[in-house]
Image (cartoon, rainbow, N blue to C red; front, side):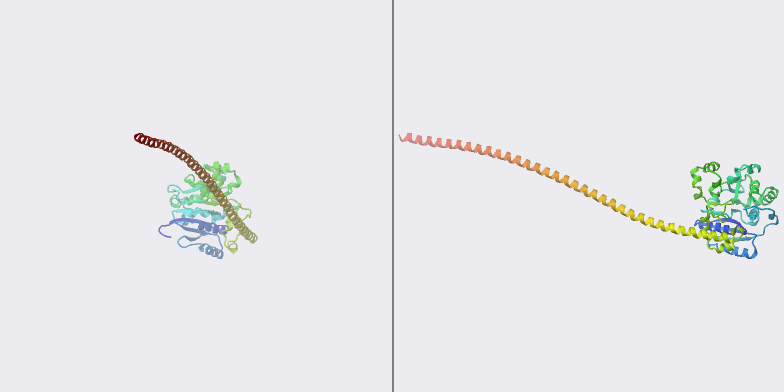
Length: 410
C-alpha cells in the first residue's frame, strides 16, 4: 500500500458450505478494485477439517496482490451454541457475524460481505457513508420489509445483513455482540439466521443506502418494476438499469448459480473459477461431482458459444466495414459527379455570358462603324460642296480678271 492509496477493510466469513462462492466474490472484488484503493481482506474461516482448511487457506492466500490487496486469515471454531441453529440455505457461519467486533478487535470500520455476492464496481462509495453515530450502513430488504414477519418483529424497516458497513468501535462500546446472541437465543423461528437479530438489536440506529449497494436479485423474480420502484422511491427506468449499475449483486435466496444451471448469474459466476480442481477443494453437498462436471461443461459450452459469437461479430464487423467503404466510395462518387456537373453548368453559363458579351461588343462596334461612315459621308459631301464652291469662285475670279484685261485692251 502506498501513501496515496485509501485503505478499505473488508470481511468475509467462510465455512465449507460457502468456500467456493466466497472465492468467487473475492476475485470479483479484485477485478473491480480502483487504482487508488488498497483492500485489506479479513477472511474468517471456520468449520473445516484440518487438511481441507489448509488447502482452502492456501487458495485464499494466493489471491493477495502486493500493494493492492492483502488477505488476513482468521481461523476460529464454531461456538457450541451455534449447533442449535439451522437453515436450509444459510450457512451456520452466518452467526459468526455476531462476533465480528471481538474477532476484529483492532478494526473500527469494516465492510462485511456475504460469500454469495458478486462485486461489480469499486466499494469506495459505500465506505463514504457517515456511520460515526450509528451502528451500520445497510440496504433495506424489500421481500422481508413487505412481509408480515417484519410487522411481527415490531420493526418499521428491515435490512439485509449480507452487506453491512459496520461501526465495530461503537458495537464494542455498546456490547452489541452480547445483545445479538441473547436475541438469537430468544427467537422461536429460525427464518433468517442472523438477520432478525441484527434488525432487532441495531433497530433504527442504522442508515439506509441505495439498493445498488446490495442488489438482491431475487426481488426481480417476485415483484414488478413498478413495485420495486415504489418501494425504493426510484424511477422504473432506474430499476430496469439497476442490475447493470449495481455495485454489489447479492444472490440471496435459494436460487444460486452453483446449485441451478438456470440461474441468471451462472455465466458471470463461472467466469471467476480458474480450474475444475477448485470444485474438488471447495467441495460440499452443494458441489457434488455430477454438478461440478455439469457446471464445468456448461462453462465450456458458454465459452465456445462466446467464441462463436465473437467470430460472428468479427465477420459482421468486417462486412460492415467493407459495406461502409463501398457506401463511402459511392458517396464520394456521387459528390464528385455533382461537383463536375456544377463545374460544367458554371462553364456553360460563363460561355453563354461571354458569347453574349462578345455579341454585344460586335453590335456596338458595328453601330459605331455606321456612325463613322455617316460622319465620313457628311464630311465628304461637305468637302465636295466646298470644293465646288471654291472652283466656281476661282473660275469666276479668273473670268473677271481676264474680262478686265480684255476691257483694258480695248
